[in-house]
Length: 78
Image (cartoon, rainbow, N blue to C red; front, side):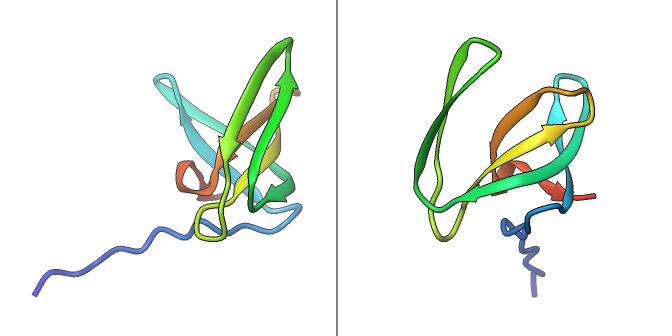
């Protein structure tokens, strides 16, 4: 029997999260959740994610001071 690992893609506002970034890890705090397509201009670049009920998009204040837009499937709890 094979065990199935379920990755939680749902996080709450204010929750600390992390994600793979280059050869390291990014960290930050959830600011907003989107269950639909979302587009933001971040540091002069348009960034979009197709959030859904199963895999929401999150706007995150990263620890380095920048904002990032990630899908829940790109994140893990901190």
